[in-house]
Each structure stands twice: as C-alpha cells, then as structure tokens.
Image (cartoon, rainbow, N blue to C red; front, side, top):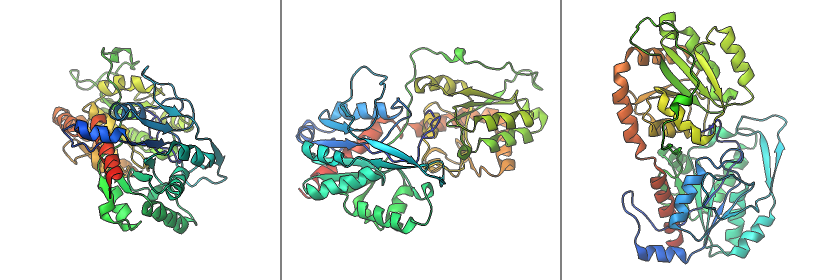
Length: 431
C-alpha cells in the first residue's frame, strides 16, 4: 500500500464502487451460462474517491479483474487517474464534489464535509442500471437509495469494510445511526470483509443476518516487478554490531506521516531499547505527511537518527522493493478503519507487529505464529516485541511461511470473486 493508510490511505470521506459477475466459489470460475445472464444486466459502480492523488493504487487491479469477467459495467467517479496499465477503464468522471473543511475536525478521517452534485442521480437513471454498487454510508449511498426508490427494478449492493464506529463521533451520532439504518434497509444485499463488520451491522444497525454476506472484497497486492530492484534502495551503512555475523533487523512502516499513525510511539520504543538492541535493528519509514517535521525533530531529540530512516513517499509500484528487503512489518496506528498495508506485508511473507487499534488486525495476525498485536500507547510492550524479534531471528522463516499462507486468502482474484458473487446474488434475488 502506499500511502488508506497508504502512505496514507483511508481518508475520512467515503468511496463507492461496483461489481457484477456471476457467483463464484473460491476455487471455481462461474459457468458460461451464468456469465451470459450477467452480461445482460447493467451495473453502475459509484465511487466518490479512491486511491491516492492521481493513482488508483490497489483499486486498479481489482477493477481490472472485475471488468475481465464483467465487461459491461460503468464506473462513475470523480477526478482523472493515471493508470499503470494501458488497457483503459470505462470511467465516467461525472461525480462532481466539493470538500468543505471542518473548523474542528473530529479526526484525521473526518476533516471535510463532502458535497456531491445531485445531478449524478439523473445521469445514473438515464443509464438504467439493474444494479448499483456503493461503498460505506456516504452521500453517494444516499443517492443510490433515491435512485432505487425512483427506479424500483434497480438493486443495491452495499459494501462495508469493517466496523466504522471509530471514524466519526459527536452530537449527531443518533442521526448518523438512523441514516445508516435507512441505507441498509433499502439495500438489497450487504457485503462486509470480516466478522467485525458483520457484528456492527447486526448489533448496531439491526440488519437481519440473512441480508449480510461476509467475504474479503478489498485487498492490496502491489505488483511484483520482474527484476529485483531492491539494490536501488538507499541504506545507511550499519554500525559495528555486537555479533559480527548478524545484520541489523529491518522493521518497515508504510503509510502516511500523520499523528494518528502512532509513529511517535514507535520512535519512543526504539529509543527505549538498550544500546545492544538498538544497534541490531533499523526502522524504515515509507511515506510522507504533515507530521513529518515533528517526527524528524523527535528522532533527533531521542538520539536515534542513525536507526530510523525516512525514505519519503514512494510510488505504489515501487513498494515491493522495500517489502522484499525488510524483515518485519510494523504498524503502530492509533486508529485505522481497516489498513490495507498489513495485507501487502502478508503478500511478501513478512512477520507483523500490528496495532490492536487497526480494524484489520484480526485478519492479518495469528498471534504468536506470524506476529503480535499490541497497544500502540504502551511503548514498553512495543519495545519488548522489537527485542523479541531480535532475540528470535531463527523464528522469522516460520513466521514468514505463516504470513504467506494467510496471504492466499487475500488475493485480488478472491476479492473479485466475492464481489462478483455478491453482485450476482443481488441481481437474482427474488427473481
């Protein structure tokens, strides 16, 4: 990932998108007859924003996988994107939005109010879709419900990543919950990535369990280059080590440099280590953001400038170089909806040190087998975990195998299959 959580990612506003395709099992492709039925249906994918800046990041391979199976879809979104592949995507850039900054943001996620031109409703109605696929509880999901009410034959597939309760708080919470229940009530089917999301839908939003499908639909798998460019990474020369035959253990962070990501506690954990441990590890930080200056000052004041290297933001396609060169992935976030960087780390077989406050922690960490979860505010415990990996280097290959095994669940192919299956079920429901 780069900077959702990717060198940032997962911002405060919502994005939405579509799928259409016959129901697919984890290991089998759908039949030709079912494909034919799917192609007779029209699917509209509604997306507010996705990716980071002009890049689609992890969205691009997922959308391409969808369109290989369902070529007759239309994607409504905002902003032009630079694609990594020459094969064009059927993007309709008619989602016009304005971001109004909040005077007192409640979190890094909720910094703006997003207003979307309602004329998108008219444009989508002219397309006459059989299915709308939308994500989360943003304004486009409200518009999707309105479209469904104006055109009753249009079904709605709602995508919910996980439990969104930590994204926003405040005096309008009751209104927010009521609006979310209304969106869920008018959705034909709801797909969520994990048990946490399902529990939220049932317990908080009172959604009938029979209306919910659980299956991973959003993952991040940076493409691995055909040649190994890891040698191009600038590495500080290691200091003299207590054990001449060992190399420093490389702990890797990928994400935005903002306060919510908890890097200040990772720096404090490093500085708290005894000198003999500090000299046997290095932390690489990939990403950029408004908190960088503060982090640089903290690194200098703690005397760990030779142990923590800020590489800056890197293109999504370059991330594999860093993942393959690292030994352990670390995410000290103070709150993430469902960070995708952990799934990237699994793909490259990295052991993980994952904050308990990330919504994906239960998906990517098998405690004691491929890593550990921790309270990011507990600097002492984080430091002990770093020491454990240094003391147990011989365990890294076993942890790596476990991570690679887990990664087979979180492929683009499987995510597309789950989305396609849910979309086709929504299309066929009650027919």
